[in-house]
Length: 309
Image (cartoon, rainbow, N blue to C red; front, side, top):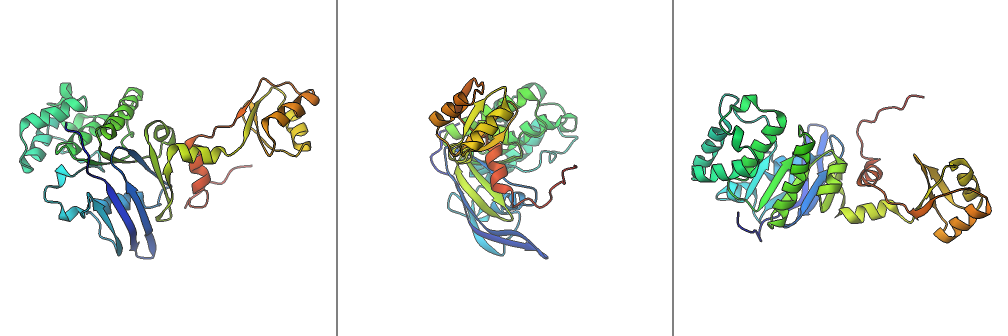
């Protein structure tokens, strides 16, 4: 596969209404070449609609979605510009994986050699002549990704590619997505799995209620969620919280740590020592991407379960 230096997606001001539901309300973001961009948000936030609009499957009331500077319908050979996986159940169940890809390739003027290349790329060589109907969900995901890569596109869109993957498949998928970006491709990946996005994505677009509510690097989002808090590892959490709160800190408890804000590390150590509170570590608190995501989307969740008391 050749290195890519073009591609990318620019979404600007997308608006779309289904009846009384405002599905997209000014959705705007950019997917840059050379990066894995995670696309995340609560159910009903507009992720699937946005991806369908980018691929020319849905029309919008306002706004534009451009791939390499053009709308999807303006691309002369679409598969050579953008590859996508929106539905892993799409292949005909009675057709072999290889025949499914041959049919797609022939429709775009490509031959069997390219089909065998992408089959090998996604690790399906030994199962290529089996019927797709007997594939597991994880194998269908790989087949869908092979189809997306047929045209060697500079831009790739994948909707929930980790679904159905076993642990080995998840590890493979992480490395695979990073390798696509390393080749210079623009990679947009929607997922509900924040742990996988933290390990895979370079950049994150967080959406809620039809618009982007955050558009930043993963590192910046984690740093912002971490704030200037400290983590105190102690076996006497209650005592630690008491003396630190009296000293003016804001405190919260975790599994085996107390999170502290409002006091510098040196002062925290002094207060604990003066209070006779045992502790083994005082360090900068590091939030997870899931912490950052939950903070950002707290007001954008459409349905929230009640906590039993």
